[in-house]
Image 1 (tube, one colour):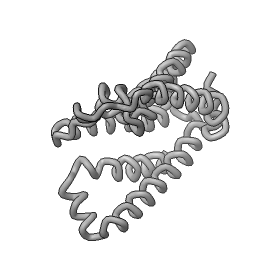
Image 2 (image 1 turned 45 degrees about the vertical axis):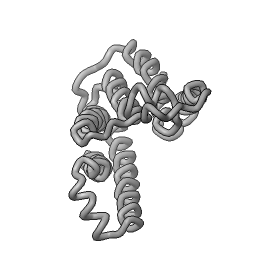
Image 3 (image 1 turned 135 degrees about the horizontal axis):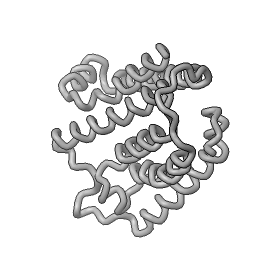
Image 4 (image 1 turned 30 degrees about the horizontal axis):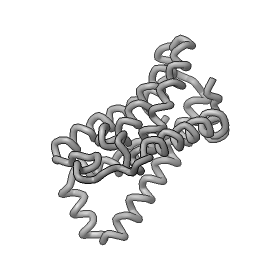
Length: 191
C-alpha cells in the first residue's frame, strides 16, 4: 500500500503543478524548459511505476475490503468507459466534442475513476480511483479559476470529420484495451 500511496503522491503531485503557476514558473526558470519537462516526465513515470506495482500488490492481497459491489456495477463500468475513451481521444483532436467539454481529458479521468469506484470496493481501489477523481475535480476547479477556458476558440472551425474520427478511434481503443490490454497490463479481465 505504501508504494501505491507514494506513486499517487508523485504522479498527482507532478500533475498538480499547473494549479500553482508561480511554483511551476519558478521550477521552469530554475531547471530550464527542457530540464523541467525531463524532470516532470521522470517524476510522472516513477509515479506510474509505483502506482502499478503498489496497486498490483494490494489488489492481489485484497486485504481490506470496504464494500462488495454488486456484479451489475461492473457492467455499468464497461458502459461508462466507452465515453471515457472517446473523451480521452477528444483531448488531442480538434472536434465539437472537445469544444463542448472544454477539458475532455479531465472529464475522461473523472468518468474512469468514478466508474471504477463503482466496481471495486477494496481499499487499494478506493485510494487509486478516489485520488484520481478528487484530483480531476480539484484540477477542473483550478482551471476555471485560472481562466483557462479550454476547448476551441469560437473562431476555430473544427475539422469536418473530427467528431467521427474521435469516436472511431475512441471505440477502437476501448475494444483493444477492454479485450486485450486490460487483462495483459492490469492482470484483471474486464468481465
